Amino acid sequence: MDRPLLISAIIEHAAAQNGDAEIVSRETHGPVFRYTYAQCGARARKLANALADLRLAAGSVAGTLAWNNHRHVEIYYAVSGSGMIVHTCNPRLHLDQLIFIVNHAQDEVLFFDSTFAPLVAAMAERCPRVRAWICMSDAQNMPTLGVANVYCYETLIESQSDTFTWPEFDERSSAAICYTSGTTGNPKGALYSHRAIVLNAMTICMPGMLCLSSRESMLTVVPMFHINGWCAPYGCLIGGTRLVLPGPRLDGASLYELMESEKVTVSAGVPTVWLQLLQYVEQHNLKFSTLRRVLSGGSAVPLAMIAKFDERFGIEVRQGWGMTETTAVATLSCATEAQLQWEPARRHAAAANAGKSVFGVDIKVVDEDGRTLPRDGKSQGELMVRGQWIISGYYRSATSPLKDGWFPTGDIATIDAQGTMQIRDRAKDLIKTGGEWISSIDLENATLGHPAVAAAAVIGVKHPKWQERPLLFVVCKAGHCLEAQEILGFLAERVAKWWVPEEVIFLESLPVGGTGKVQKTVLREKYGGVFNG
Image (cartoon, rainbow, N blue to C red; front, side):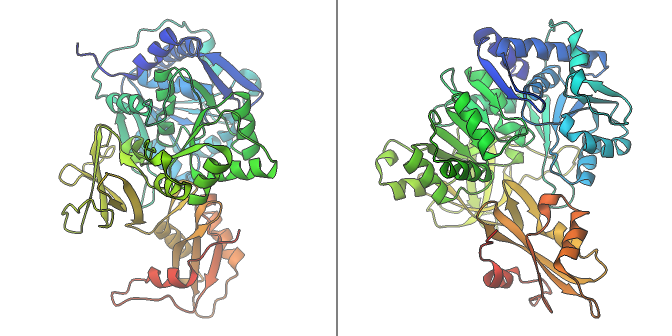
């Protein structure tokens, strides 16, 4: 039979076949909340009825500013299942960028955790298309905003029926949208279809991926606003896996307590999270009683981290690679039976690669002329990707990013004879901090807005905690003098806080090449060591 792949089928399958499986959610307010897949399905249907009462139609966009919690899961299913589009907004973006993406996506409703109430208050007046702001809270914990058309989530759904007939439509219809981090100009929207999400979610359940089944308990540390939580909120419900949601508390102590109390067997997040967790566990001489697998992505996994997880705790690290434009994972490292027999150093080095492309995705590397390079593990070129869940264009953009049917990633990589891919460099001077991109160009432009600055350059420098942090170089105008804290304070008012550089170095001039461009390679050679902080 030809049946459409729809997100509504996931929640209905989960409720019917694994109805007693749990979703455990650490609340923004109060203790841990737990309920079953069947109860989640009922509440999602109640929310779908509430959205219909708000006169949202198929194709309408509903935004979220939210942590990983049970209400966010309900929104995922109620919005997309109704034929609407869920737009997960990254609260770490600068206010101006947040306002841009809400307006560009044409959000009609925006759900928000009470944590982000001040953000909503600052955004509301500049987002005229949003006609309902829904606080993901009960009446007791509703914040005071001074914004019109604010609703309480629990009040909104409490009187609704839990009977709702999910519509059927083309599986290629839009289900979700996620915007890039705006590293080169304004953020761009990656629009995902029902088909793309369902296929990816089915794939991550496989043994060589996350191995999601009713025998597992998964803690999704990766934010649900970061490429739909790498599709884990869909995959867990397909596999019948207990879904554990950490809410706003992502520190090492809180994650460890949740892992132990909920008998977590698998988890996913960026390296920064794992480094913090390991530091906490080691400081307190603790052990993991159930955790067996960790999926890490967003930036390169330190070899020392892989070794520590393996040798001290017996936990396997699987490194994945993907990007906003690939819906979620595109490649993954998973040790073969033969590799498991290797001596530790060799085994850890293999795990540090970005792995092989998963079924449904093709990869290749090309030279500057677009010629495919050999899979010899040495030939470096731009990584190109295509597949069942790779986007073909950006939302509301007439220009296609594709080259001969392939998506150019902007990463420099190698692929060996066995198909193992390794990211070698970045084609552009982007800086990755804790799994998030920072634009050196945008930072430089913001710095140049200071009246005392004549020239500026930014490079990424290795950092023991965040992988990379920006280092700012400033040349002052003649007759002017600046202190580091003054320029950093200036930037803090113009960019996201986590974009603000770690340090400032004042120079008399920047190294410039024959074409007039700043030679960042010279700066890296001299200053690109490792931050101590």
